[in-house]
Image 1: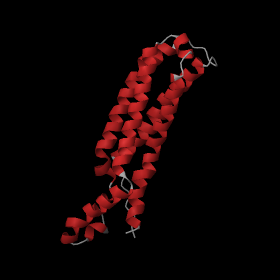
Image 2: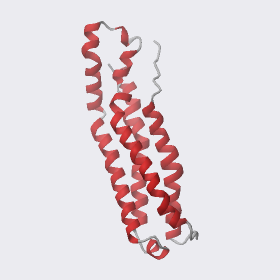
Image 3: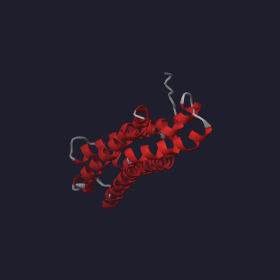
Image 4: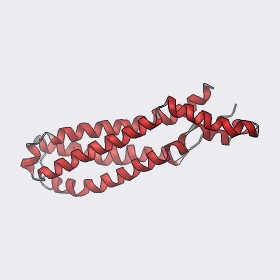
Length: 181
């Protein structure tokens, strides 16, 4: 049996969000801010750069999460496999109902709506924590006196792990689900 590998924009964008933006830009910036807040690192210019650059990074992340949520079903559903042999060889009557049925069963099994809603909710909580931190003030004394930096880092970790896990929660399960039918 020939395996069809569908390389799609959804997985590419999820990977770029997870790796390039969250793990290589936002995560290290939060870690450095925490180190400054705890006195482990001194970098007086970093705090102003952090509060200047982070809204831009958050805007990019929000746009990517919105895109991933909007196009998840269309980009990673196992019904896509019905566009390629051998599944595309079903008769017309079967193709009229089977791909959508497989999609609906898969979406229910992987809890698609809840997984996507969780991504939005985690991002919203992270962004709200950032706004709270920014409102507290961007001087070193307000950063050092704040537990908000720890909460921001905690919310970031949850968001980052969820975006990473979305691949196994949704994308790889579409392939394994088809093997089970």
